[in-house]
Length: 166
Image 1 (tube, rainbow, N blue to C red):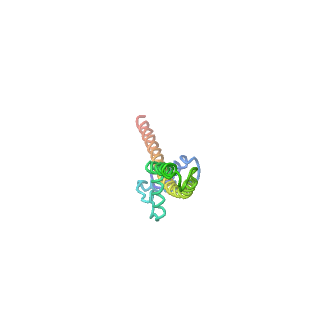
Image 2: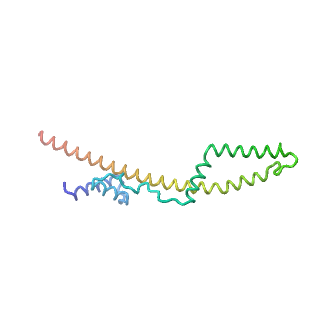
Image 3: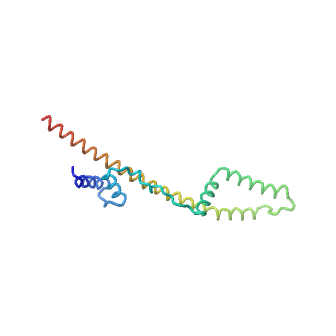
């Protein structure tokens, strides 16, 4: 089979897999990898994260700590100590008497700062997940097309065997 007819066969299979949609960049990349008989997982930029800024690293650390049991335990302990100090230890001279308005202000400020920082980290993680999903799609698409190619070759061999028997 010459190279061009193989290309047409692979394009036809890709069209059937993509349900007739025009081939996008990922599909054309898969086509080229199949034609060159290359592993698609060898593409080095699949999970390239690039250099991270200080802010991105800080956001990742804040998100990792803010979502840990250590943070929850430490914060619960802080709140409990704050309340006990103001209610029991400084009963007559509390710096933040019940209903703990200063504590509420601190909690609100922490939430106002922590939430966007955690969202920045989640957005970076979401981009990494999108890159992984795109790489998985390309690998799965290549595997499906190559399996279909193998099926067609096996079917052709079976037809040849039947012709030989006759």
